[in-house]
Image (cartoon, rainbow over all chains, first blue to last red):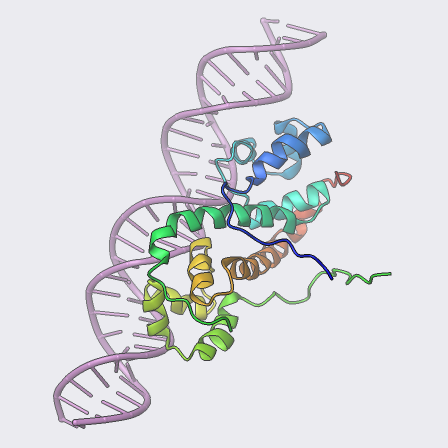
Length: 105
Length: 105
DNA sequence: GACGTCTGTAAAGCTATACTTGACAGCCCA
DNA sequence: TGGGCTGTCAAGTATAGCTTTACAGACGTC
């Protein structure tokens, strides 16, 4: 019988995609921020603010990154999604109790 | 040996989450748009514009929906993500060729 | 006929995101 | 001294995500 990991609520926010980009991807490619921005065809400032985790990876940016490092856009969008979801859950924590739960369809 | 589905580029946009909401979820719950909006604690207009596929499901909205119909926020966010990604790929189709591909890390 | 509730739609307004360009200061290296 | 790097700020634009107010048409019921 197969085993399944139980999906528990997380204690901390899932990594921002900027962290992976900054710590793994760019070093692995040996590219400077400026050079990567040029190749991605976005402004240096925009890439910088993603690396600094001050901006999110938009769907368009995910497409660029997916092409750029050959791992597909979905990877980057999923990272960002997990991050955003965590934030949204935090933010709505109290309000959420007021929303009725309906039986799963 | 296991078989794996090959992931081909899609010809059409993946369904907008509004379509599932409008065609499956709300009917299954037997709720009017107004009533659902009240329970979700968002404006009727906002929910309406998602159902009409004129607005996207934001991370916050996904959390509301996840609670509301007990299937988890990730479901709704994934639907929206797939939809957005398709749109972004369309939009960047030509520009994308100018971005160099690096060997997968 | 009048009431209440639903629906679709539009408009104004607010805050925040996703970008751009330009600019400045500081760093390291040749 | 000059080059390209980096971090950061500021201004500007466009769009998203939300709200409230408002109006019109449909439907059911008393």
